[in-house]
Length: 328
Image (cartoon, rainbow, N blue to C red; front, side, top):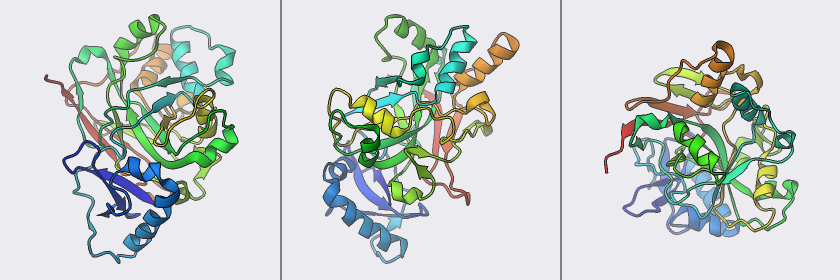
């Protein structure tokens, strides 16, 4: 099934069930008022929501409304926990190669992960508001999952059963702020502003034959100002699947329902199908020409991120955002 959150004058919005074609939706306050409420009680709500989804796809619900014009928020506008991995080690290897740094062997066996800000995720059509272009504005196209309660010490195989919802995200980075932050050896903070989400999340069964062993086997398309930057396949060259990422996050503590886990920038070895961020494009230019020629994003730039099924139908809806100057 497919779920979304639309504006209703509250911070957490209104949970809605969306049909497969992403054309109609219906509110379900009698089942769960918000996405967090649904995931908190997933054992009860999942079946009830699935029944509504079936009726919605049949056109049997008179209260359904036009989803294409709805004011869409992030599916889970605020989460208790957001951790982003770097599952595509080939991407990390390329970035380090561009600055003549060796990749530690442990990176192939022990996932990189950081905890991000989850207090304010933004919607697929919200502006990317940044105060200064000089900060190096970049998009990062990723796959993400939302879990139910995950016990500490879960195995990678067990963790797969805790994945309840799947989507795609734009994990914006401010590249020129990153070096100074990392030099402090205390992780990202200022360099990671608002993360934006596709309009809908879907359950794993909706991806029959495409969601395999904790990986989503489809190209992820990133288009900047109507120019395709890349369409790497998210199921290829993913060193750590989502089960492994969740197990890594839950090694020493439980994860609460509604935890969001990101894949990191989707990348294929050799970037044969293009890139999912401008940093990678620039690294390829440095390796080839000795210097980057592609600029980071500017005010007015438009980034679109989308994943389609084999028949060309959008699965999660499109992320379509414009970079604007943040005014206090």
